Length: 51
Image (cartoon, rainbow, N blue to C red; front, side, top):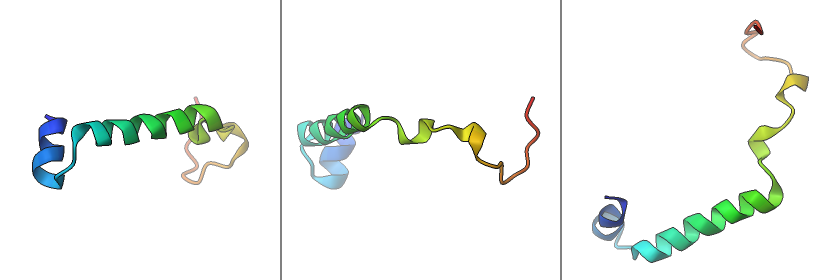
């Protein structure tokens, strides 16, 4: 489905899209997960009570 959409909507070769996606994932692995930081140290802006 995504390969068809890439070809029809964006005129992209699915392999080019796949290579870009894999490269982005590899960059995340190398630099660490930016979203997995120590969230417990930061104040909760919504003031949600913790369980």
